[in-house]
Image (cartoon, rainbow, N blue to C red; front, side, top):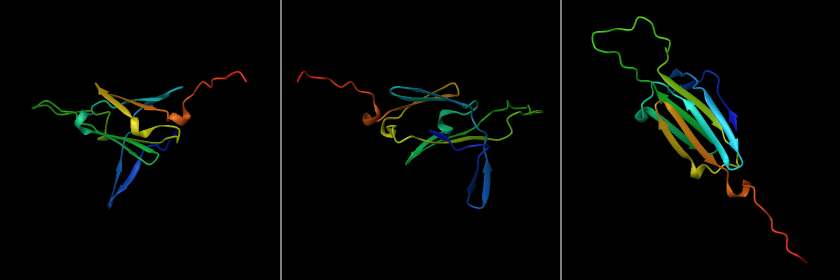
Length: 126
């Protein structure tokens, strides 16, 4: 798997959007990979996941609400969205991706395809 990002710039029609890179941990085991992405301030309905060919795209729109009658005097998160793109290995089964999203943490599980799974070969006597 390859990470195709750095502060992401994407041309959309005639404008260009800049996005924050969410920190992502990638854990590989014999059965597949697990990605854990931190997306604080992103509600579930503003989270977008897409797999096209061998590319995984994670996008989220930040919605931080300021209580009525108050205004922000300082903001450390100045960009309203996250975006991260990964190139997936052909050994992964993208038809069986599982996703969980809880408290701003996205957890994706992508299993290895059957042909890439380790298997035991039985040896029979001759």
